[in-house]
Length: 219
Image 1 (cartoon, helix red, strand yellow):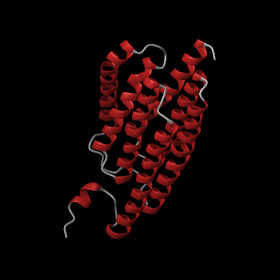
Image 2 (cartoon, one colour):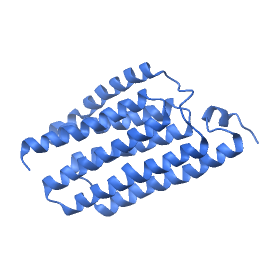
Image 3 (tube, helix red, strand yellow):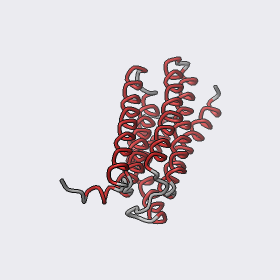
């Protein structure tokens, strides 16, 4: 792979990661948010595959296939099933409006690049220069978790946070061993499946999954 093609693929995949993260803050439709999460998972898999091809590493390419199957297919499917069971369609009561969310996401992206500056100064190359996007993805995931009141929306923010951590790991060190990445990703998938069951139970028992309403419940 030529250096120009490698840089182009890194820029394309990380650009998709950042765009899908920012759009998560803007969109209030849970169906659209889940689709964006699937695109984000596919972009992460493309990033890992690009690094694997550049390094001629069959192990990293294997991780890319695993990431594609779990983060772009399995997790969105589980979240879609959860939305159908609970009847959740939109994020009805976010703590901030979409416009304010976009402004905060822009500030967090700038902050991420400032924080990533010492890393990019030590590790050179097209991959290292995109570390700020991984940090921005993490911060945006935190933003979604802090400002959305639906349990499903917070679960989407949690998956975004995990995607950001994985992005930084692959960009700075070429990834982690297959067994470690498999264990971490399956742990996240297990959390998603458990929370899918719990949100379904909460919907049946209490008629909703809004966290403010659930916090008002008492024994």
